[in-house]
Length: 102
Image 1 (cartoon, rainbow, N blue to C red):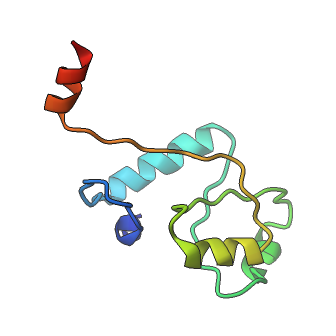
Image 2 (cartoon, helix red, strand yellow; image 1 turned 90 degrees about the vertical axis):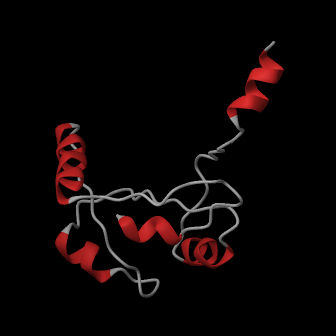
């Protein structure tokens, strides 16, 4: 999970996330409790054979990356992924927010 700390932040002031084994287990339990599975893998090419072999029942896969990450977007497009949701993160200091809230 901590490997994502090198993902593009597009100027956001964001501290690295530190994941412990307990944190990952808690997330896994939450996902399992919702009747889902979480797989973490690295795609080395357009044919992710491990998933086909170990989980042939899978019908959909979700992935995400920054819109500015052209290299990962190209990989996702080559693998057949299409955009589903566009998330935006906004950041401002509290002094600016207070000044505009009055």
